[in-house]
Amino acid sequence: MATSREVSTMIKQGFISDSTLSFSPSRTPNSSSTRLLLNSPTNSNKPLLSPPHFNNSSTELTHPPPPPPPTRSAHHHTTLFQMMSEEQSLELNRQKTQSKISKLVKEFDGFNNNGVFGFGDVRLTVIGRDGFKVSCDVHKRVLMEKSGFFSDKLKDRQKGIVHSIEISECDDVEVYLESLVLMYSDDFKKRLMGEGVTKILALLKVCADIMFDAGIMSCLEYLEAVPWTEDEEEKVISHLSQLQLHESATEVLQRVSCELSTSCRADDIFTKLLNGVLQAKDDKARREMKTVISRLFKEDSSNHDSRLDVSKDTLYSLCHGCLSSLILCLSEATCVDDDKRDRGVLMSEIAREAENLQWIVDILIDKKEADEFVKLWADQKELAVLHSKIPTIYRHEISKVTSQLCVAIGRGQILVPKEARFYLLSTWLEPLYDDFGWIRRVCKSVDKKVVEDGLGRTILTLPLIQQQAILLKWFDRFLNKGDDCPNIQRAFEIWWRRAFIRQYAAEQSNSELQLAVCDYPN
Image 1 (cartoon, rainbow, N blue to C red):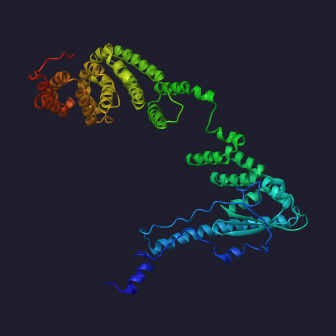
Image 2: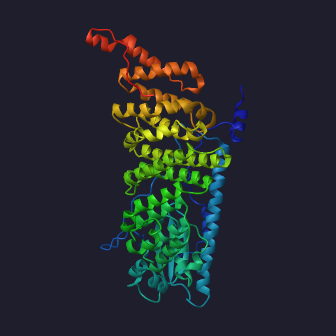
Image 3: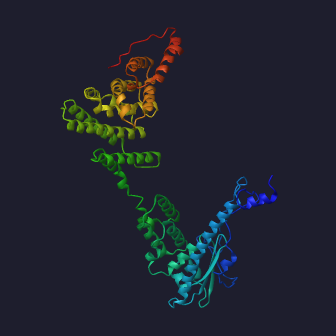
């Protein structure tokens, strides 16, 4: 057992947490270091001013109490080493802030000594919420000329004497002083150059609080000109909304908003973008932009307040275009000669149109508008006939559309009547069987298990007599083709139990369920 001295040593080194030690991130700066910045005469008559909560009907100000500093949970223990690291980080930040404030105070000293403004006749003290306090001499005429807030407070003050003003509970002492220094600047743009968006937003808030109109416009012009990250964009919109600058902020917000006339033309823009992708000459760029646009449409669909969307008519118009191109390509493929170049070009064109169709169908599924496409695809008898006449290497991408629909139906993402589901399988199940082996070997983007599960689930949504016809035919095919045929044993087992074990229909009719023959086109 460790002695008390050994335990004490381990706590000091940070290897054991001590529940008696606590730490608050809100700390008052060392008073001796703060006094180096202060030289304030005592004046019990100085007015207490705290924008922006000034009430015009009374000189008495009220403020909401500052939020309590965050505290650590009683169940959360931290080691002395962690506490020291946090203290060190806070101390470094405090030193940086004080260094910046010291430079700002020196700038005020420069204004007092350069002979342009003369000596300051207002003793301004700014006190932060954490108690940090800074005093400097500023000029009444500058404050009154530039700030509506200070003009209102100083207009009736006696001339020829030094006035004292105290700003209490300031959110950020450094930013407040920076805003006052800005009043003395002849070139606001140069003064703000290089500052981050977050700093400009903080300056904008102070300028709005003290009604420093020139500072407000300079901050807004700066925000309008500099680039924003997406996080900064959210901050800009939030701050401008809170400050309620209205028309003054219009130029800035044009970056993220548009006129209603543009919104009304959104479908035209989407149509142009989608057509551009479908007709792109570079395959790599086409695939990349498909991914980007699909992701953006998904983001848009998750935002229920969004007013912009691509119309259903536009998407189905694109589907019809892809289908017409596929029929034309397959017609050419049925009479292609043995020239390898011709075969290669034609195969590429068929794959391209099939991929385009898959992409539009994906968008329809995400938008929950693919039910009509199931009927449209099931009705493509001519395309199915052409499909059977050309080699698998040309046509397998077309069968991926069928698997795509079966997966969506099996997941409940497409809801269509049983007639449409059976019609779909009647037209395209055999072509999918024929191409499955090639798809399984060549198309690494296709998950064989997902397709098999979706196909099985789709079959099991049909009436039992139709399940029987399809699964008995699959049974024979699977025994002959093996892995080149989709493995839907799970669906076969469920059908078996429905037909022979549960015998729900037999109990209802008091007769045995008979194996029936259902017309199922080849």
